[in-house]
Image (cartoon, rainbow, N blue to C red; front, side, top):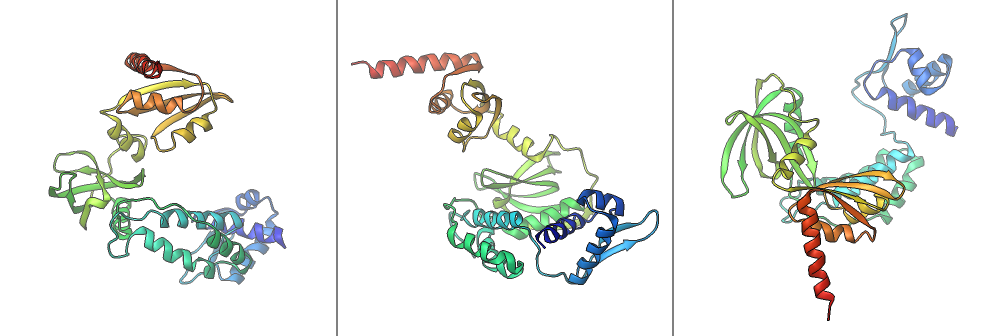
Length: 322
């Protein structure tokens, strides 16, 4: 029975992608016979899932859009991932709680409702996780879920939006943009968009956006200015900083643990060697952080970093001499 349950969950996961699958392709993915596939599809229909089929050489299976669906079906790992995700999101409390409409309150409400949408088999395990798991609170700016929904819909439909934007200095301006991506970085949500007035790519903090309006005016999508919205955001944040490259004689996981709050790239060069690339405001700060790994290291770039390291070493030596 457990094998059948797992197979049904995998079949449903494949169909929920919205794709059309030929019988042969779906059977191959699930490693079952066409006859077993047909029997499993009938089971899904009995459970209330509207699986559409088309016979013949060009036939397919597809999960049709229905008015209602049965209770949420998650396998064990998916249920754990959902609980962990809601726990982490619920811990991102705003510095100044507003009206309870942010992500953290919504996550807490969803957390309490999750078990009633799960199969009976998973409810005890999920309840146990909920009662025994906690995440340390992290202060994050308030972003309303509806802001992401409106911007995401406009971006998907290539539709101009307008909004009021408050800068870091407190000045408010009216913006008219082509939205492309919502990007999450360091507990902040950003909108990557083409700003029409200066005619340039920009990122906007979502917690500083208000009065969002979809205009129903279409735009022709432009190529993104980077491989991803996150890459573009990181490039903008590090433009005025110093790039530093260090080879450290320890495992990449050790360095990642020491620099867990630093935006950086850590490339493993073996079981006890890795290369760290990051951008910093202070070379001295980075030297101290790397020294905390307890491993030897070599400064690869830049020369100024090496000079600062030598100066800091002399300063520390003098501090330790009687």
